[in-house]
Image 1 (cartoon, rainbow, N blue to C red):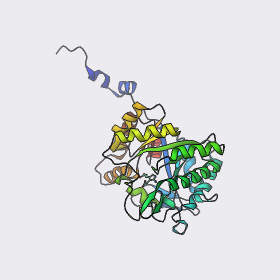
Image 2: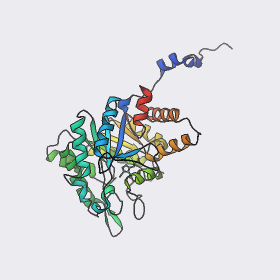
Image 3: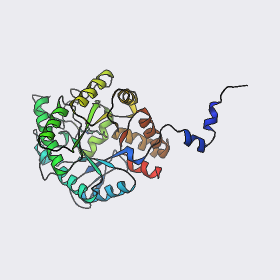
Image 4: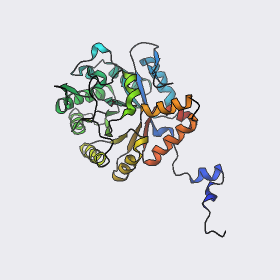
Length: 324
Ligand code: PBG
């Protein structure tokens, strides 16, 4: 054959492939989610998330130091609240000395450079396991937003760099932004879970925090996975209301959404490679059906290729080690 161009030339060996790679992962792309529990020197593996743990604050700090040394620059905090602190107001969420607030202070103290992001939603504090306040079997929007504002202010006060509302109530980004401004927290960012779908892939996470909804599901606030335009509407509104970073969640089944959002916005886009996506790879690898390391790098590279500037992933540490 006499060809004008042979595309395989650019795939000949690892050297040329690395020269022309369009997407390159770096540890600073990752946001490492951390599950925090009470206690000292306490760690507990999450059964449905093999190799992933809940740590007490002291062990969390060791973990944060390790992550920092691997080049990871941000952590996303979740706390497991005690049953006796759960109610329908979620008031533990803005307790100055709550587990979240103590964790933020301890991490910023130990590793000041680490960007600390905090989950903002009522589910870990709700007796119903819902992200908002429940009235007559419904999750009420406006009262929930008031609670989320209090929660965000208390995280900012404790030193959080970003609050990350994951609840999908209407109007919460604008309300949180105004409250932060009013209280002069002018350096606190907002990473909005702007296109968050009602997904079965959050199952293992709810095990980790013991936060599964006690009744019903989350479909009246999280998005229907059948929808694409709705993700754009939600995201553009959150940006309008003051979100610094937007997010698509989950990631792997929503790569089309990540790309579409990336093409339409000028703020950084993050994607959350969620607990069920982690668990699937872990389970298949355990069975010997997948090469875990390769599956991790291929998945995370694909999420970045789809348009994610940042990827929240339970594989952050493993991937950062693989990239060393
Ligand atoms: C809480 C929250 C959830 C996740 C992040 N924040 C669970 C949910 O919405 O039910 C899921 C993360 C994961 O599955 O890794 N609002």
